[in-house]
Amino acid sequence: MAYFILNPNETDKTNIYRIAADDDAKSKLNINSDFISVNVSDAEFASIRNNTKSIASHDGTSYTYVDFLKTETDPNNSPSDPDAEASNFETSSELRQGLDIIVNICNQFIEANPNHSWKTSIQTYKDYLVSFDTTSLTFPMTISWEKYCEDNSITYYHPLQIP
Image 1: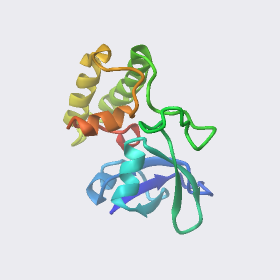
Image 2: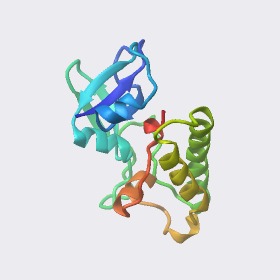
Image 3: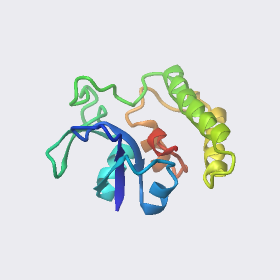
Image 4: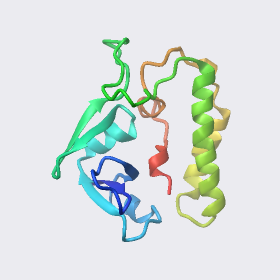
């Protein structure tokens, strides 16, 4: 069972604060008991983790999702949510900017949590991001960075997974 973690004052349950693949990952997020934990399926977790879907609504019981990315079958498809920004990249420099944001999140975690059990794996991911040659890919990307990592067996963290 996977989880979406929400801020305590979240009213419509669509603004996710953190995500966790399972109970062990949830326990390592450094969140207090005031936060709301919503059980979701592994498929729902994967769609958010891979930035392929975004949440449209929550009806009190379940979520409704919309496509977040342009698709390979319809490259002109924009995200169903008009306020969402697609997480696939048009150029190498856009991807580098996106990776640099993740590097900063990793740095903040590493500095604030020197004894955390995920420190080494997040450091390894950060090092990969820093050294990754963005010009080695074909642009525009038709998948998100996270989906690229999954498809290429690269161990990665979505920013919402980093405590």
